[in-house]
Length: 301
Image (cartoon, rainbow, N blue to C red; front, side, top):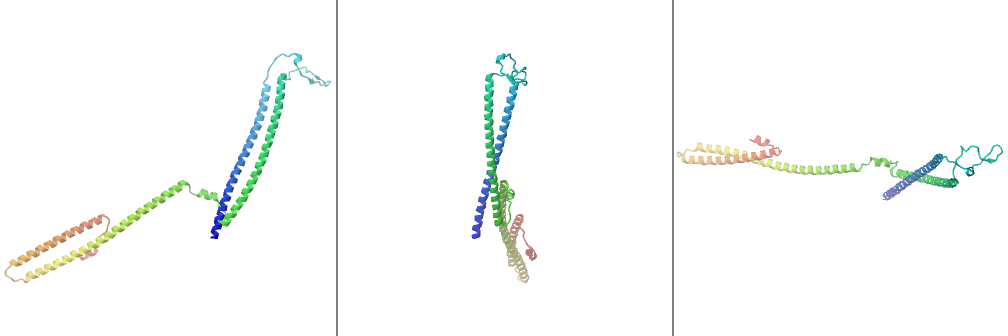
């Protein structure tokens, strides 16, 4: 009883360890999903930044506008190489022209872009921190899984004396369709066994009836043979009496002969009817598949 209780406790502990392993596997899977999601978001953010820079540069380059400006409207001073003073360049072909309002918008946009870049960098750092935390949790979960796996192997060694591959057992176990087919086969076999038992009982009953009828037929045949012997004895006695009679009057002797002849005829008719009845019964049992053994009767005849 103690060993049984210990075995039940070990099975319960094994089930709890399996549940814990399943939970850790789910946690590990969730952490991997979070890691993939973070990497995907980071790549999408980098792609958006690069796409934004590309679109901005392309649109800035698509401003082929020609118009006349007054000299007082131009504010373009570049350092002169000769005296290091800021002067207006001789040619403005390499310059970009835009209004003060556009300049303010560009300046504000530059400020906004710097702020967005800071936010993206901060988000990227936060994602990296989350990634490191998740990675740390993943390592802890893997270590816990390894510990549970070691305990699981120890329990298997104590219980079975060897390591049992549960995945192989699950794969080798029959599926639902195979189990249903096996149940149907078992039901069909039980039904056939029941029917075979019924037919065997019927066959035993028929065999007993056949044996009884065979015995009755044998008895009747013996009676027929006995009656035949009796008839032969009566005929012999009658012939002897007829031979010894010396009375001149033949009328009583003739009446006696007629009476004896009628009695023999009745006896022969009765025996013929019994023989015909027995033959009909024998033929009926032969048609049913029985076997009639008449060796003794044949020898007696």
